[in-house]
Length: 176
Ligand code: IMP
Ligand code: MG
Image (tube, rainbow, N blue to C red; front, side, top):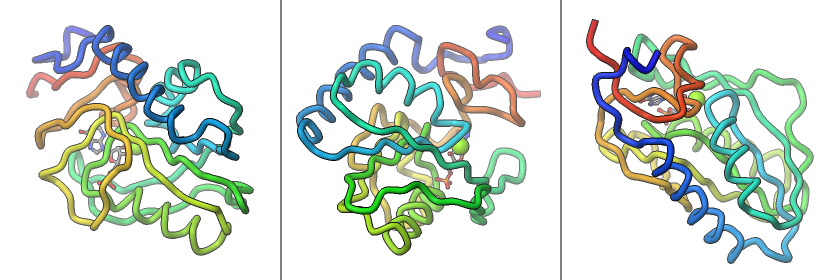
């Protein structure tokens, strides 16, 4: 699996160190608040699991599964919600967590829907990677691990056709 990478962009140790820093940023904002963390599955799973274990404040965990449709390695823009019930977050501070902010369509659709239908106190967003050049929807994440260039990356939750999510590092696939 590792052999399929052309380049490693973020080794596991670098990710782990940044996750601890992000947890400290989050603790400063959310200590003593009614925090509910909502990872977007499946991509946000690994990042969220590590982030929350470094966070050490009281919180609740929900999850959302959304499908953002991709033609190969590019997003087509349609976002659909794959569960019947939205998270119960009325009156709570919500932190949406995803692996990567690319066009921004997914996070902005989820944020808008939660705000419109779930009466949260606030909705902020946290992503490990921010592909700024690819942005189409008007959204910036409140907490960002690393900026990344406009290339397709895999590992640490990020997949290509369902593969490579469990790579401990993040990198670029070898062509072909
Ligand atoms: P957006 O709606 O275009 O911001 O897309 C967000 C989703 O697209 C993320 O949750 C990822 O699942 C996927 N995605 C975007 N860029 C990449 C990438 O470089 N590698 C793997 N998945 C990606
Ligand atoms: Mg995803």
